[in-house]
Length: 373
Length: 249
Image: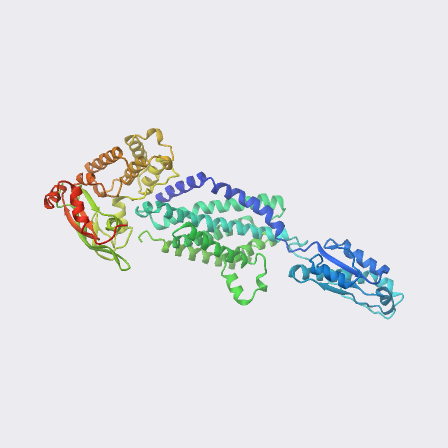
């Protein structure tokens, strides 16, 4: 173990002398965690709506102002005709058109029912579908509020509705930050692990210092451990800064589960992902190669991890990729332990799988690292 | 010099890269304590041969043993007993002189006490006491080379391999460098050195000349000059190197 001690001393000295690496390690998580969650938000606000009111009645005015009062919609000027409103859609000024027909109020009083027309600009899919459903729910609500008034005049409407009242567990206000911040933290740790460590070894290849190591009796696993341990420590530091200062301090996300369990899983994940970085480095001759290959895998890891999209909604082939991705498991564990307070029993399977990844990548890296060309 | 004590022996040692035969069935022996010069034009196969002997490169054929260990079966034992200084400077430029010495001493398993003594002695000997805490990257090339040599023999190996150790170094520093080599040889370390400088070739006990991956001549400088009826080693080199068919790089 003595050579390992010298390898570690050397590695830490080099890291702390690196004028670019050190700020990256500490500043990157702070900045990214403060900025990214603000953008990574599924909620759609400021939907531009154009209302064509052909009725100009009390009810139609009430509906218009109800929509305008909601925080999701922004009422752009009222149009007189559908044609005018459609031009607004074409010029991208409006996302939604609501047309209230002539005799809207009268028909409601007389028959107890009336249709309105909604047209949606579906260029931006998320905005369109969410906007459409927000608008439907506002209209449903409006519907409910006028029921008592029309009961007197329209006795023949036995409208019975079942109200659904949903409770969102573990994130009661559907705050996307609560959902996203822990997951973004995972991505940050992944980048630190996979990039920095892998590039470090390739740099030694480029500079030629690895020759001097290869000609010494140093054991392969000592050398690999000497690279892995420092970056494991850095990964833990980056995570702690992000977790305690930003996630807890700034966003107020108080972990529900055991911190010990979380850190144990983090360490396991870091070993796996560092092993992956090391593996890439054993195949690369230059930092450029290592960077490109890492970048490719990083994109797959991030996009196929269930970070932005639900894995359950993926097609079968994509699910296979998602479940062959170590990042997927850590994001799940983060969300489970931090938000739900899951215990070891709940994540046993995740632990076993990550153990598999860690073993696979590191053993492969050690076997593929050759002192003799 | 004890002629019977063979520390390196190569038999038909060959290295092929695809169709190209970099080292073509070379056979030679190096005796304990001698300074063995390994000469040849650029691209003659010197570095490849040396890398095979150091266990950095797997031979394609032939046999060889270094310090009594087989290069196929016991490369790690060989590594324990040799020092190596590559053509390209390969100490850590972002570590200080002292830190480099301690690191390389440490990975060869020197104890803390020995390590402390060694590093103090070595820094004194090289006259670098004032610069012990200077980053190696900021040193002039000549100092770097001397430091690299001292680090290569810090663990008292029985053989040290030097690949063009004085390339790009001024004549005074080269002279000082050879003083270091003689000192090491006096301590019983066998020196295996490649060079392009023919004056340095004269300092060697024996010389082998490589041409197109083969050993074209092997003897003491005096004997070689006689054999080729040459005044200087330069002449010997020209006569042999001119036979080369392979283009130098």
